[in-house]
Length: 285
Ligand SMILES: N[C@H](CCC[C@H](N)C(=O)O)C(=O)O
Image: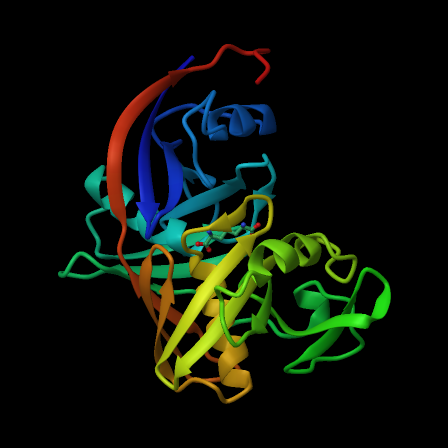
């Protein structure tokens, strides 16, 4: 089977995008892991599959697979690339696109300046919705590491459809990310594992963010992570309603009017190349 794909990225968070509207593609975890390998495959953080809608109120369904092969609920940078992809491919003629993901329905707006503005939906803060093991919602939780009460961190737990832990830190380049990222990503307090964001507040309109992603490791940018960080910072009154988050791959602009309101994220989507890949049924990685 020869499959056509497009390589894209959102601020360096990179994707293999497959049109499963006009191609008959059935993705398996083995395919994702084989193609995601940066030496023996194509290489990506996530694989995005564009499918016909399963509900009348949306134009498409879009599925997201982490490089480790697991299907996940949401991908903000990927959503912007999805929108640019379906527009370039002529799969839509509208500049406003509603799409269904496993984490809920989001709405994308292709702007005249080439940026994509995404309504990422209303963040979910109840621990059971993240999911996170806590009795009830708090803006900040204390989580013990290595079962050592002396070794703990404070974090916020936010779902953007996918789970996020957000830590406010004094310096994102202080070496915490490679140490705490893996520890928290698979911490037993997060039954579905978790994306771990490290946010340094520069001022009330600017933050620096690094994200150690569930199933991938640290990426150059994370859109849903930026939304979760915005929510966590606003819950602690550290950022204003509109803010810019600086990630290693570039900047995203975020807006959140508070609980019960959606988070809006605006940023770029970049095409890199088009390609084809062959896969035989029964082939392993
Ligand atoms: N890079 C994506 C996040 C992917 C989330 C995935 N790592 C998960 O397990 O939820 C973004 O821009 O939102």
